[in-house]
Length: 173
Ligand code: K1U
Ligand code: ZN
Image (cartoon, rainbow, N blue to C red; front, side):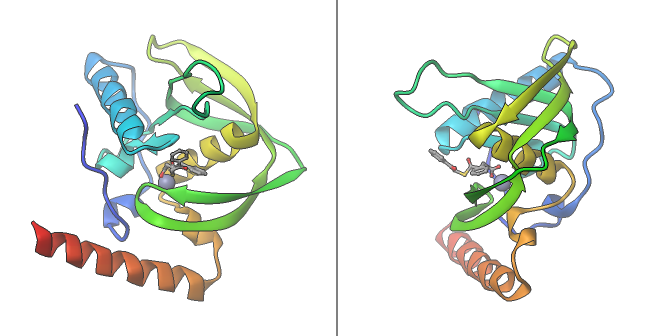
């Protein structure tokens, strides 16, 4: 089932999410819903707080169309355990901040550990778009948005645009 995506500013997008105690059937349903919501948006990642659930769950698939088989990944309690010194600049977007993009600098490679949907611990080193995306999604779990890396004036400008967008959407309902 597709779930509605919260739009910034929303207090739920600023909260630090709680770890999941164990992977239940209810959480597997949430994970499937998040993948469906992410693919439909379309997006390459989604974090649980973006659908109003304040638990540490993320979904990702950074395989570009026509560049091989899809790789839907769901992570419970993801943690960056090592980061490269070398950085990478990527023009990021966010499904909670539609049609706004800005360059963000982050470590080029990160090693992440997480719990998979079967409750098993996994670890993998990501680079390129996967590394950017997993860091963006883990930031969501800590109440941080990509605009928090920008200068205050630019962040304020984007926030005002989003307030206007939310007013317009509310009027259309
Ligand atoms: O977390 C989110 O809001 C999803 C976000 C993830 C992300 C994008 C770019 C850099 C870092 C993290 C998105 O998926 S925005 C949409 C997007 O990037 C995209 C959509 C369709 C095709 C390709 C990319
Ligand atoms: Zn985002």
